[in-house]
Length: 313
Image 1: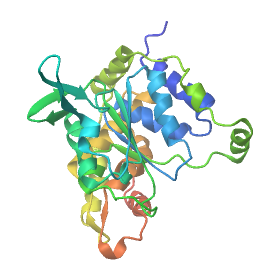
Image 2 (image 1 turned 180 degrees about the horizontal axis):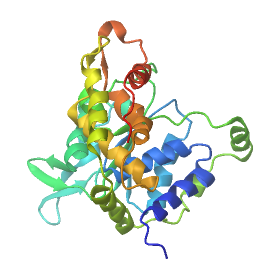
Image 3 (image 1 turned 60 degrees about the vertical axis):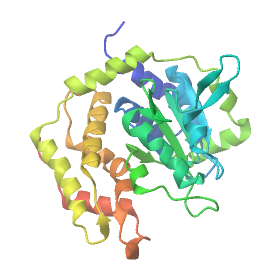
């Protein structure tokens, strides 16, 4: 048996994208890189394209405990974190854990929840713990939030605040499948039930080993560090932006670039790793000036990539 920690990770990506999320290998790979980097994933797209299916498939394939939060306008923070209830038999209060106490938490249609409820996830996402009634509870490790979001133009949605968006390591969409694949899906129907039968393809120990390998073995050179800083710094004085990429965003870009290099079988980051993830990691962190709200954040970042050539390594 190979000792390469990449093998089980790549097996998960290949199995899910070939059998259960056909034509969506990019979304599956980005989700896996988010987990390897210890971050959280935001899936932005219209309903019905497989956002929930991706979260379910990932949880089953990794053998992780799964919690689902169906976000609605009347959802309360305690519906996410849990609450204390009075136990008459014991004559004392007992804490009932909410769905956030799972390895992988799906916050479905997060932007349908009220801002106060959205903020209930902030501490959990940042510190992997929650404080309830003055008492702090640790969340399981690994812990990852996959949130889905409908376009804000849809009725009944509340835009996520910048502080919430900044907690997401990567933002991506699912997109429509290729024509031939969509016709097959129309003919054969949903594969949602089949996902529940997926046997775990990866143990938590294997996942932790891969994470350790990334932290300790994948190197970030001075040239790549300078390149990341340059791509981040140029957003901060951009005339169309009210605020550019924070230091947290720069760290996120470096961490995901390491995961990208790891999956490619390299022990060092190259410029292509950074370029491939620049939009997914940084676009949702940009704050446009009010008069430029109609502009595409990704187009701004693409122009910055062209204006800042990658170093020779």
